[in-house]
Length: 304
Image (cartoon, rainbow, N blue to C red; front, side, top):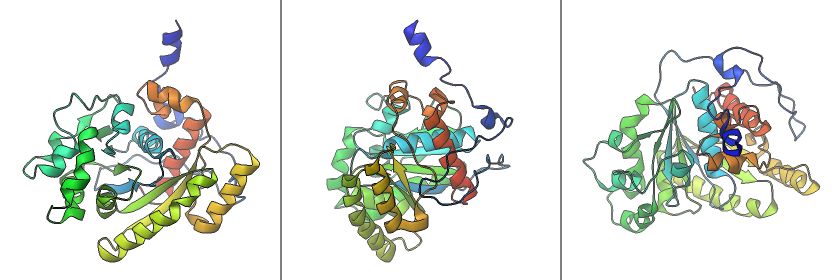
């Protein structure tokens, strides 16, 4: 009975994603900025080419994988075709979408180092409509060393994604927590970067280094790379978190997303269920926050 209750409603779509019902108002901007609730996105008449977004921060535990899965989950419910590229040897995004990376024949590692492979062979369809993943496992940890001797080593991922872009509306690259060659590949392949930052002081320390890496990639390899925004995660209503929010705003100004992701026990629960929280618990506060992020991305023109 307890297991049945745990998974009840895992695949329910919220009313607003079915195209009826009112869009629920979100909490006001915690930084005091005025904004209107973003409308539910209109259905698309056609799909592609995809906007490629790198979810990047070299500090671990700030919500990169969680945000990749749940933003993609929310966008998929709004009818956007989403592909998550698991670019972390830990393979958390793969497992978080119900794919066993150790049993699949091909992973992102295969695609990077097998030039004649069709990238479509690496894509895994999840049980969620409009949501696919290119899986990763521990094999990817060897890629940093192997890439050193590759021709055009910074552009290998971009060449893998190129044949897939016309089939999706958004491709989200879930980066590993480092600033090595894999992350440089992600920044080279991306149109823009979303930086998840946990609402704690330690999480702020590494963002400056990340911005230096982004500027180097912009000046040397990918001049069109943009910083789409900073997403504050793991927020609780404490003085510490509010001070961190102010520091983040001072550094990034209007690049800080209006929506803030609260710390929630439902997020690990949805990970155990191998489902985005927007499917697992569609009525939960955190689901509404991730849907609001998805609406903001569409309203700002970052995603079609």
